[in-house]
Image 1 (cartoon, rainbow, N blue to C red):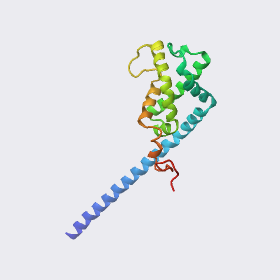
Image 2: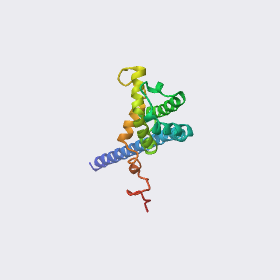
Image 3: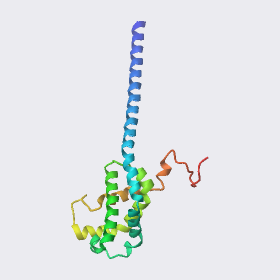
Image 4: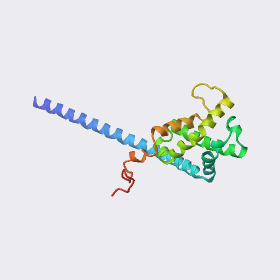
Length: 184
């Protein structure tokens, strides 16, 4: 009888060791997948951030903030002079492409909002009337989900839900305290 009880105890111990090994293996696999995903998105983010800082898109953002609000936009992009139309269109496409990457979970909203969120918010707020005018002038009503600059508009909403100022505070490694001073 003692041998049977000991055998059962050994079986339970073996089962527990197997379950623990399975859990550890699963956790390690999940960590590897996370690291692989980050490794694949890092070059994309670096290139997007570099393009955003370019002189060309900087000029486009300045135009959108300083001059676009005073422009006639009744016919959407067609209302703008061709050189300004190209600036605005390229900036809008940049944010629309970025929004597509975020929407399809190729790039995480965290670093996008933390680094570009302020620009996403401010440029969309300046460009929204133009985008709506362009949609109406150029396309008319489209089926749900098919909107010119729809990814850009969605990116704006996602950044509003994950504000730029909040994103760094969510990071464990963020080195500033709540008053903005370096932690000691």
